[in-house]
Image (cartoon, helix red, strand yellow):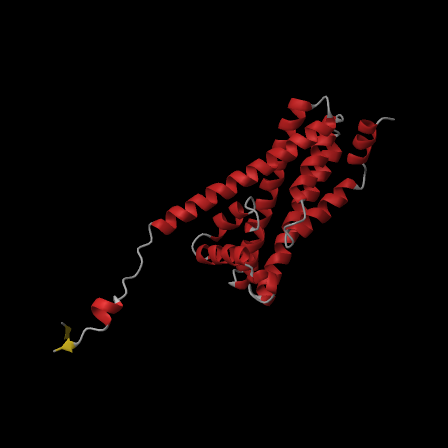
Length: 225
């Protein structure tokens, strides 16, 4: 048995769906865990090795369940602890993401929760903010489930593309699928940053008195001279 055969056998082992579920759950409140990489690698290897429908369905279902469960854990952390209790929450990038989420949660919670899943750190920040701002859980959970299913479908699409282009090499197909997911994440993050900068550029700063020309001028009959 050569290396590729071993890799394919390991990548389609019965325990893989459970591992995918754990990765996706942990990623819900600990972003360094590469859940998307795990899902796409598993699905791509499954497709490239023959595409056992039961295995693929199990992996995708495990990914969706794990992602939704991870969202709920982040929501619970935000509800119980707020968004500034621990040192890592006060890091500049995390605080920027939390501030961004707080400013939009009240206006468009569904859109925010659905789209933030594809933004690095954004998913955790948004779900914790949903809990901290007391968005009702009965409203949060259905949105989270829909988002998890859509995210799982996106992983399937990227895996199908990679397996179609490089199905002759499971290892290469898995690598291409992972690269595609990273490029998608970077693209969404870039678009989000550009929108933030454009919105900030349209904010008119409040005018404050000039210390030399106004603040120190004497007042005569209620007017500065």
